[in-house]
Amino acid sequence: MKSDLIVYAARLPKAELHLHIEGSLEPALMFALAQRNKIDIPFKTVDEVRAAYAFSNLQDFLDIYYQGMSVLQTEEDFFDLTMAYLNRARADNVRHVEIFFDPQGHTDRGVAFDTAIGGILTALSMAKKQFGMTSKLIMCFLRHLPEAAAFSTLKQAETWLDQIDGVGLDSSEVGHPPSKFQKVYEAARERGLKLVAHAGEEGPPDYVYEALDLLKIDRLDHGNRSLEDDALVKRLADEGMTLTVCPLSNLKLCVVDDMRDHPLKKMLDLGLRATVNSDDPSYFGGYMQDNFEAVINALDLTRDDIKTLAKNSFTGSFLSDGEIRAQLAAIDLVR
Ligand code: HPA
Ligand code: ZN
Image 1 (spheres, protein in one colour):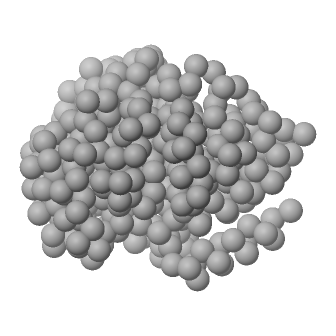
Image 2 (cartoon, helix red, strand yellow):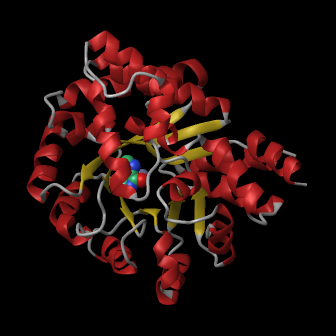
């Protein structure tokens, strides 16, 4: 029964590995921050905001996503944003989060790097103290900007590197291949940072090869279009590469036309280490459990598939081996 699987998914401890903190900005908080900071936004009601969230591709979304960020001004704003997400994730039994943030989305409009990261880190440490949620922080480079801008972001991050776990690559994919960022990824690797990159969301399988071979990523964000290349699928499976898959995002951005065509089940059957994530939950219609419900309702996932997805979220995380073992044992206890 689907309803049993939905309850099972809700009860399982899970990690979220693909979450843009700026994409968790709910309309209600957007209005509150706009008022607090005296910033004009082009919406009067929550309904108007929701109506604007009809996207036909990644760029449609990004235009609105960067506009939404404009209400984030102070360290307190970033704290409130992050705390709201962490509490919401906790309600879905998410026990560990690896959060992306987009420093250039803030520094380019005059908000300091330190303001953004300071508020985010305070919330992460409070969630650890208050409810034991563990976290990692991943700083993303905006790929539509030049590599030199990514280098300058890495420089601004220098004094925070003990609190940043990795770097990622996001924003407009097509026309901005991973190869554009080879040197800055090498610099990040030299600093001991973990490496992830969005690839194969809208971009071709070649971009996934570049992320693997040139950026030397530890984890692949999205990766959907890898399925067009059998040799690539085999390589990803053989290497045990984790894919951070985002079902509701894929539907909203028309990466899939119908949830029944979503490749998640196929990925698992091909031996790929897929995980379920919410990407930008405020914009795409839901958090972790909403994503599980959507795929359970649309696809023929088994109980073992659901368990595998939860386990993959920890084995694919940047937690220590001991922490991963403890989370996997907790999953085995759920009936
Ligand atoms: N893809 C690319 N860039 C992004 C996304 C995404 O899904 N969300 C926020 N920035
Ligand atoms: Zn993303």
